[in-house]
Length: 595
Image (tube, rainbow, N blue to C red):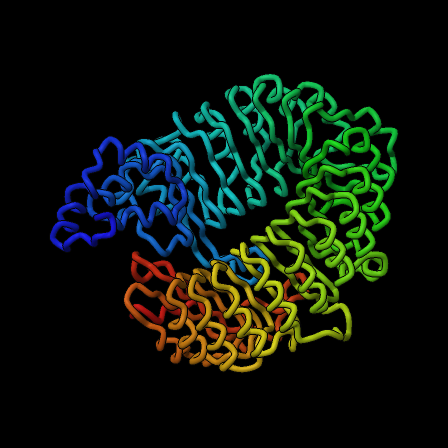
């Protein structure tokens, strides 16, 4: 009958014969429509046949950490990849917390994979060291078919390599270089790209030091009728009038500059393309913001992070943008600006509030607190992503977010040390309410001040974060007991970052053993020994442990920015790896396991 359980022998035969006799062609077709990595992973475990077909039909792979896998094994497992993404240095490198010589070299990956991956059309490298030679290897092997090249926050290469890409990769549709540290040997690469490419859809060299020739951008617009996204470095907006007139299909623009703030007459002739709906302008002041008023009602994304606007300016602009889906600002927007966001932007999906300049004048007119967050939670109920630097916060604000923002999948808050006292700490009850109600959360970051979350609150984080896969916690907990209680609840957590915590090495090691899905942990600032000996308690097969001991001498030294040196606090990096012990550890990083 339908409810009968098949005999083990019959079930085994069914699996070995193709899981119920499903034809091979059908399996190829079905798996070709399965893109989610977790679903692919599950399918590959059904039986050997499904494992083999998954290997042959997998089109994209993301390597979450470049030292966690081996290029040769990846090639053997997925020989027909069309798209490959590799992440390098820990996220902390973006905030100056990792020394420059950490490693994360692209050389072994591109040397091993560029030639044999015959179907490869897209490469995405993030926070990696990439040389001109690496790019040349990729271009020689795959330049004729490369459609996407993303170098995200990478360093080590020059515009000579970009010129080679522009000249050789004529099928390139996306070139992404945002926040890369690039040696500038001239702007010829952009001219070559404009001359040689006619299919480019997206070009991004935002937040780089690359020079721009407006004539090259205008030529690019003439030759690439499909260009819909352009994000550039500094270039006076008045020099881009011809480009904007030519690029009729452009939907996204970011960068440029108002180099002569206060001279609106110089910019009054700037007319943006008719389809433009995603915008980010740099160095825009009060007198220049009217350039966006004619089409503000159609904007879906607005980035004001690098402007010179006041709180009142933010209020005026945002009140004219009722259709925003994405808003990125600095905390100068203030609670008053967030109230306007709540009243106006009912469709908002993503809100990012970065830290502004530590300028007393800025804080007097701006600064974000529980008042602004509560207003946004109540008014913008479609929010899926919130990242905010706040000067004050309460349990009630977190409870409001949990009550009204049911679609939230990514929540990050950093509590700044601007106010002398935060009245409503610890935030235990607010964090519990947020995590209990926002059941779609997958990414969660909470960086507080000492006393911001007790052991009880840390236990709540573990208890109610069953679906969260990435977490960053700073200044949380009171003892080792709180950390262990937290870890026992994190059954699906794959990546954990901890900063400025009171935990011992032994507790860190025991906590890792309590989290069955954990693949990566980075810790900076804890009760460390000089040798990291207790970290070996977490040692097990395929688990790499690397330790950077504290440097007492560095604690008295400051960087050029007046901040403590990065090696003044101990760091731990541990991760699951099929590649074994890395061979390029810098001197300051000690590999503890495997020995």
